[in-house]
Length: 147
Image (cartoon, rainbow, N blue to C red; front, side):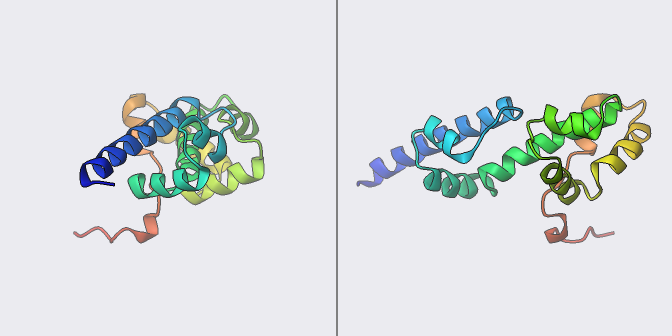
């Protein structure tokens, strides 16, 4: 393949990956798996996973779970739904998996977050609350803040 052909293929792959990411953002509450996402992008599941990780720094599944946890955080801050209701509302089918992933990303179980976050974000516009409460992946890998 020529350099020009390889560049065109790379751009085509990036466009397909962007469509996959956009689909995850839109349909996070639907049952999505890597195979279905790959079929929609006309890629193999393995190629999609490798290319997605290379482009975005995490696997498609990890990206999906982060979107679900972000939405769960918003629903939990409202305080009118139980943790179980939130789990199913964001597309998770296992409360155990949801709680484990939530705790990994947020640093506390969803029930604790629900109690603490409702008071902490009271009076803050939702767009600001979403930004300051967004989960950060691999916090322990980040360099410490300098004073």
